[in-house]
Length: 381
Ligand SMILES: Cc1ncc(COP(=O)(O)O)c(C=O)c1O
Ligand SMILES: N[C@@H](CCCC[NH3+])C(=O)O
Image 1 (tube, protein in one colour):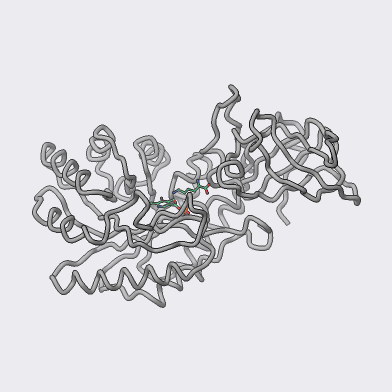
Image 2 (image 1 turned 90 degrees about the horizontal axis):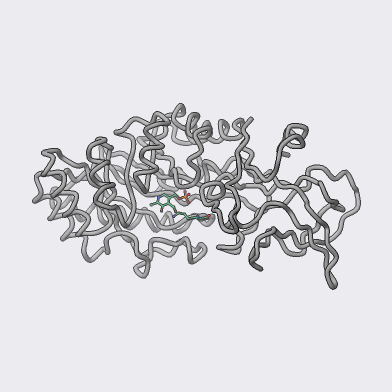
């Protein structure tokens, strides 16, 4: 069971994000143990959570940074990620973002289209520098996850279609200011079923074979992120099974000598160390149901409203052995502002403190000010 500093919580205004750095440390240890002696490198996807309190231990554990905006690159640099371990992904990098990233000498651009490639080449040439580039390939693999967070299908906007990869590679080889260092893939997020990763290994191996026959070698193969976590029962698997995940690649993808395999993990690094802590404002009787109205809303944690996601809800203060059934809802003027329907919880009262678990990833970073609400604070221990 997760431990919460409850007396500390009771003194604070709610809602706020709480991060347990002990859980994060265990997670980072499991990542490094899972990698072992393999030539694998994990880049933490800052989009999951860019809170500096989390980034400090992530830098210390030796992870690189996967960024999707200049804002994230700046946060990564401030947190101490070495520039050459910062990779810049994203389907719509603006001119000013490319300009900043070139000047910062980041490690690599994960390029998603031919026009973007040509722009980076032109801007690098104007600065007389060489940009490292990995081409993001759309491998047309179904990740069997929520349709909003699947990214590796032809119908998705991401990456360069397999049919166009030859063209993109020849553009790279012709451009003196581009150094083609890798191929990049990312098939989706919250993937709990490992078969799509095995299929990805097959696709990668086919491409490596095809291009090595043409004398083209990639220093880096980047297979993206996506490893899912257990939202239903976080305590049964607080630390994701990283070794099993890396083993899929160990068993299905033979790297060439000196070749590195890169991963961009976000959710599996940050989710389980975080909870959204909220107070019960009212317990309201409806027709045939009871509502727990809490002071956190979809503005603080949007995943339930956006994806129909469910975060485990725990009442941290009730000591009742009796339970009741409730819909747990927030104060926002939207019917989708609902954290759980027909939740069985200990009998709950005004003032009780609830934890919405597994909220360390895509929680605080996605908070917004709708209804003129403040962005929640964060507390670490
Ligand atoms: C290109 C890319 N890399 C890495 C990630 C991180 O994914 P996750 O948080 O599922 O590990 C994402 C988000 O899905 C992404 O789009
Ligand atoms: N924000 C999403 C995942 C998107 C991942 C980024 N490509 C979530 O909360 O699950």
